[in-house]
Image 1 (cartoon, rainbow, N blue to C red):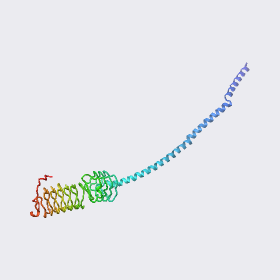
Image 2: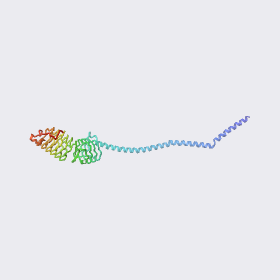
Image 3: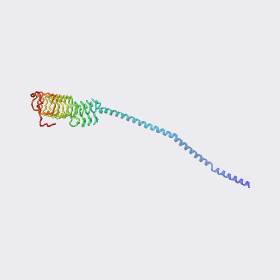
Image 4: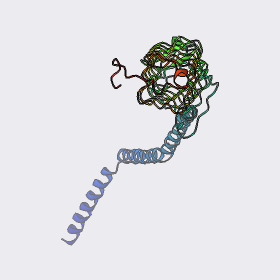
Length: 333
């Protein structure tokens, strides 16, 4: 009985060992080996990609970025150089066309031909002999500027402020576009408020021209044709009108003829209401029907002068001061 039990146990153990041998056959072991190999290779590949490949990728990206950045930087540098050059030009123009009311910018002889300088401020600038051909100066502020001998060929000056501008000897101004009431006559720009001090305008036909509020200190109007011209409030100190035709001209309301010479001038029907004639020389002048009411006649030289009432100064002790008239045709002006 005992021997039988031992035999049963041995049979059971052998069966178990036989099952184990079946599960670990050569085919199964090979399959498991391949599976492990594949898994290890994949891990190695992943490690390679994550390390080496990523390194090369990053390196390529960095190189590409460096090249692109270098090219962009070169373009930026070139653009900055162009901008710097433009800024230098702008600065130069600003130096020419601004702050001139503080610093008298001297642009004498420069060429500003064809530029658009509309609304620019050139206050008090020295612009002698500047070439403004085909330049747009519309709306520009030229107050007090010296434009003498400037070239104004087809220059646009419409709306420009020309108060106190020296305009003698300008060239080709007859082709310019000028503000209303301004005219170009024999290379002289004539109009409201201009400064023609010392300029020779002798013999010119300037009849009915508008000179009011201008400055004509020592200007030579000898033998000029100026009948009906307007000199309201103009400074004509030391101006010379010898032999000029000033028939019906207006010197009213502050016209200053201090020490002016009007020898042999035709002043018939001229208007001197409230004008200052202190020290003026009226030798041989014809003042028939002229309006001298409230004019300052201190130290006027009356010699062979035809007085407003038609008499001669020499007949009244060398003066016309007592022979003025109040013509009905001249109400208070």
